[in-house]
Image (cartoon, rainbow, N blue to C red; front, side, top):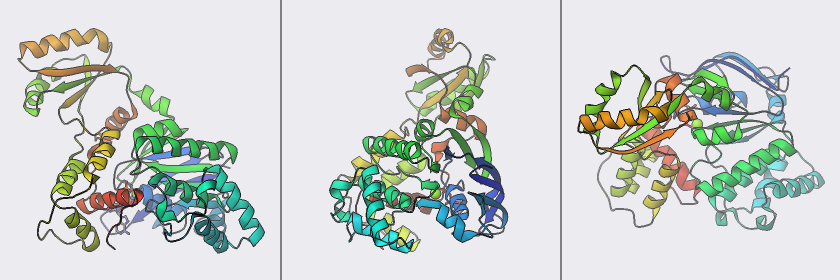
Length: 395
Ligand SMILES: Nc1ncnc2c1ncn2[C@@H]1O[C@H](COP(=O)(O)OP(=O)(O)OP(=O)(O)O)[C@@H](O)[C@H]1O
Ligand SMILES: [Mg+2]
């Protein structure tokens, strides 16, 4: 029997919208399975059902042989959960946060001490264990949450967006910690992410989820092999150039697929908004009410950090076309000539192998970076990023 077996799991919050729409999959012992999907795809809702926090409207699942519907206590003992939203008490020290969690699980004093020592070593926080969490960096907080999730020796760990809002270097270090606990402690992991590079690096298999449904489930390599051929990425001077050139490319039968690369629309809109009114953004999350008035621009470097996060997730290009074709290298001169004849300015031409971004686009018809969530979802995400970096938010 697999460690996790999920059958037709379904959740709807209102009659028309199924957050999770009858998904089935299984996870083998010791595997890291990635849930890759855009905002609102149903990732957190699935984890919440598997961890017995939400009751499904249909279907069921077993974890470690225990049914989530009929044996919730046994399921909870089998799992650790690192939530998408930070849940540490920043007025306590790292050790105190862990101790509190150990008490909740009924661990006696000696066991708590020994396990706290062990998990702190695993995430390399021993030196900072007795400092207040409010003095920790975003990456240290995330590592402490992972340590906390492991304290009761769960066989299964759910990591919901483990590196959201972290800088690339910290993100890398969290990846190494996840791999280490998976290898050393033999913990089976489901992790959710909308970072394709994260799923590619960490996961033995990737489940692409979109609109609450499983779109594909396979190893990263097999997913990429589905897209036979090369990708040629074209960057143009402006979007008018794309509009002019695309119909010409569409006539070429040797181009299998033409994709417009994401512009990070909502993040860009969000970023613009932060330039004018960060307070307004926060108040929208708090009250979910409409914008009333503009206030002063941000005075710190938040904008710069925010942009950096966008950059890392590759959401910079608003003037690109990706072409999927065979023998890309041989076709490039032909593409350049076509652009010259059409008097379209090409700023760059890049040849590469398909990535998981291309796979996502190909199987869903949408770009994972298009961020289809509501505006409020997007604002919430910004708040999580603020919290991950230790900045206060209004509650
Ligand atoms: N408690 C709730 N009440 C109503 N709708 C909800 C609730 N929780 C989630 N939803 C909706 O269910 C859908 C799936 O949400 P979910 O949080 O599972 O997405 P996700 O894949 O985790 O997205 P993200 O990447 O933004 O975290 C979304 O449309 C969301 O708005
Ligand atoms: Mg989520």
